[in-house]
Image 1 (tube, helix red, strand yellow):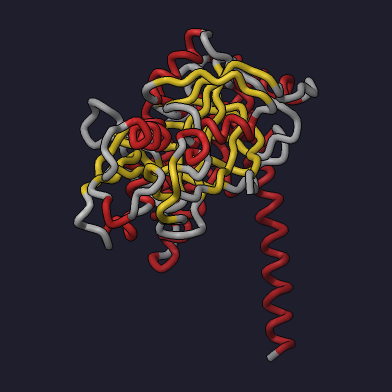
Image 2 (cartoon, rainbow, N blue to C red):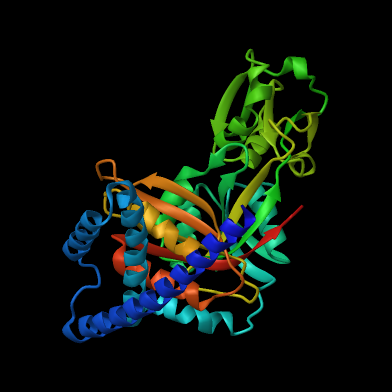
Length: 383
């Protein structure tokens, strides 16, 4: 049996050698096609030609192998398109400048004007003090105002939450960033420990209202579900909830917020770690108006939209897989004003800005209905 298996493997090796030789011939011919398209201005994607080719090959294949042959050639066509696009399409100014900026050996600033949503003691404020040695923080009512302050130049940077390990994505931040002309320059993974606070001397039995941000409320749903007699009131920010509880004349109001708010607003902790899980992290983006890429890049992010056809998303994902690039997150977001059409938000791992990465971005810019490069950055952990 072992001898038969070795003979079969030897035959497979011979076939594979022939396939490689023929495939390299095919790639050379595709390069000639790319040159023709470059000279004539013809588009890389020729959907009719691809469908005709797949139909012909499907008829050649035996019925039991038809789907396998079709699947293989769909992948071959994807590689051919990418190869042609890389030879024909000029990258945008942003993509073209990535490698150059990453090689500038710039140092992330320790001091800067930073926009945060909420008030002093908010989790965004905590994240800003981890990202920067000494941020000059300006506080704003909502996330949109943070983005506008960066876009207008009022603040050099902004800090925004975009995902929590318990409660998921901060949807409005994704939607605003899709319209924002700036970039992500760094991110931080912040451990979150929610506590319940009230005025000094107040007992838990006196509490009739709990105020907090809706994300924090969602992250503490188990605790709140066990105390259904207490009214839960969403507000703009966890630290604002603490400030309100401290300044209110009422004694029956509590806030779910960060532990640092106790000292800042003179409150006492009634219950500690009221979140659903002690493994609770919120990811924060640091954004800027201009593209900034620092050495030791470990992450990248982008958004894109596709035509509504079978396999369109799989085509994109398979390209990253073929290039050996690990995608760590993909999330669909509805496109406002469009009938059940979606854009996709993607994050991935990288070690610096590679040629394969910039070529993929160039192809996606050219072939996607919508493409926005979000940034190449380092993710730091505050654990």
